[in-house]
Length: 320
Ligand code: TXA
Ligand code: MG
Figure (cartoon, rainbow, N blue to C red):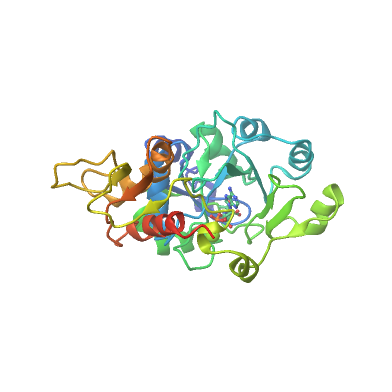
């Protein structure tokens, strides 16, 4: 250690926590890879995550918590989940579990699903940040969409440096590949993504675990709109609608010239970040018996518009 290292200022945890509580994004190290964090209870902050990553679709995000107790406030813990959490948390294991009815996490963070992916990371800076923030933190890997996950603060700065309020530098990530994602909301459990905890280690606890179906398997079985992991309202959905039919709920985007006004606005000002933040809650609230269908105004593809339209096309796809 050089004298300069010796006197290096401590990591700015309090500042990072303040940014997160104000809805801004902070990149932080975990033992697997760096995460792009935002307040998981804020639709806006979560929309900003997708915007910063330039994700073409809203993949559900992992929710980071300081301990299993905090995770139990958000999801229904089964006996199996308890056993795995005891053995592997904190660590590189993510568990997908049913959301609790009182779960405060943004629907956008879990892409409208009834399940939530929760993880307790072990990295000391991640732990310090989670405790200082006092809120669940949604964080995908801190790379731009289509790039590999970052394992050094430098990777994050070069790809996303201009899009985050702060990058916490924790040096190289110890594990270096992403967490294992295990879906415990289904019986038997399904391994959705191999990662930092080996399948064998999990099978030592649970017995045999089914591997995730491949993309080809699922594509062969159903249209994209039918994939179990894709939220679709029960009412039929029509896109690019400038004149809704009688009885249809009309979901607006941007200013409307006609006499009929939308039943709900994604964004009065045609702001795709605001629209993304409201999307899943809006679909759920219009998906009710009083309406015969949901008609959505045209949304330009620019920015988060592409991800919004991807989800809407899935919601509107033929139901087989
Ligand atoms: O190591 C990691 O897991 C890193 C660090 C930052 O925690 N995060 C990470 O996040 O790799 P991301 O967004 O790149 O990958 C999250 C994975 C995706 O494969 C996503 O589909 C899956 O978790 N996932 C999240 N929520 C889910 C849910 N409710 N159901 C099924 N899969 C889910
Ligand atoms: Mg990733």
